[in-house]
Image: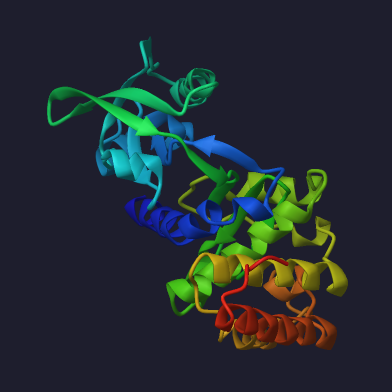
Length: 298
């Protein structure tokens, strides 16, 4: 279970600059966030609540699991392990519905504010931390419980599988994958139910992996995929990631996991000479814009 949490934390860390520095490119997804995730023992399936307590130290109250780099929470000093007691003067709940009910209370208290005071339990002491709200491309980022090499997005959420995390050689390559799914979410006008069903299956921690049911998912067309590739390249550049090796990464992935592999990435994202030619051209355009200090806007 600790390995699962560590992998989730890696996803959040790599995703942070992509969702914080691209709000101009995601107008329909822009929301203010605090910049952390919190869970309690009941955030996991009933069979694993005891394990969540023994392995992760989670109890009845919500505990901060991850702080998004560059967010208001990080700047204010919110720490991993802080126990959440109150948002402004509103006590935060404990127990089986704490994560859902706590999120609703925090969302309500955030309305109309530029910052929020959180009362936390840290080292046995109560502390009040004033957290500035951060504008971000707000979408859920989850770890997928399968060794298949793939990733999914439904318009609001995304999943990167454990297999994909094992496939990428660096955080840089992981950023390519996350940016692509962020781009697909931005481009979707409605929730993709086929993708949503897969994400629901994969995002839950289990000691055994689950099948992806990839045959129920409609693949992207090369044109739609290329449009997401273009947007993702802009997002990567704006976030400070190096885009020089982006094309070679996707070409290698297409070679290792072609469309013929039932549960691989290529089945959902068919490669094409058109898609790769677009990526090559956009990379040149971005390099020219960077060299001339021009705005990095599509």
